Amino acid sequence: MSISRRKLLRNGGLLSAAAAVSALMPSTLRAAAFTSNSTTSGLTQKVLDSLLNSAFKVVSFKGDEPTVYLTLVKVKSIASEPESAHACSGFILQFWGGSSEGIKQGLYTLTSQNNSALAPFKLLLVPAEKQSRAYHGVIYKMTK
Image (cartoon, rainbow, N blue to C red; front, side, top):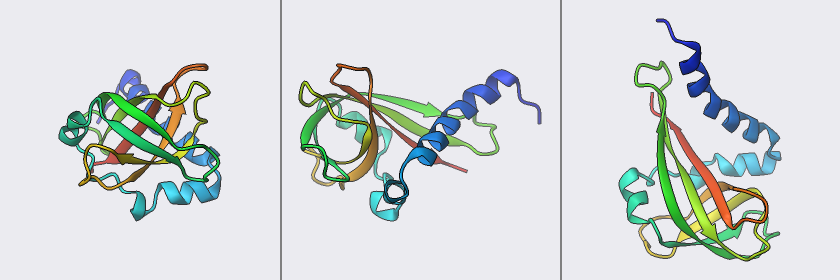
């Protein structure tokens, strides 16, 4: 099977970023982020689309940040090439809100305020820009 450099870079870029973030996380956060208690299996495109423009209670995993409420403003589906030996799929979630001081990059527990059937889930949130109230989180799953 041949693969172009463009495809290799495109498919490997997100996996490399996820691996780098995981490697830089303290071991206690890394363990919490990838345990069965933090499953995101219930987060499908249909569920996420139904949660657009809804509020989430956001609580710091370490308890060092104040509780804030963020609104899910965008869901972007991402996936590897179908012919890839290790097919992946997922979502980039964009949130907006919180206080003007913002929250730090870190692991947070998110609880939907509009869908009580959705279990709280852990997500690494990253500020989009300095002095911004926008945040990104990535959910990425191996499908093969």
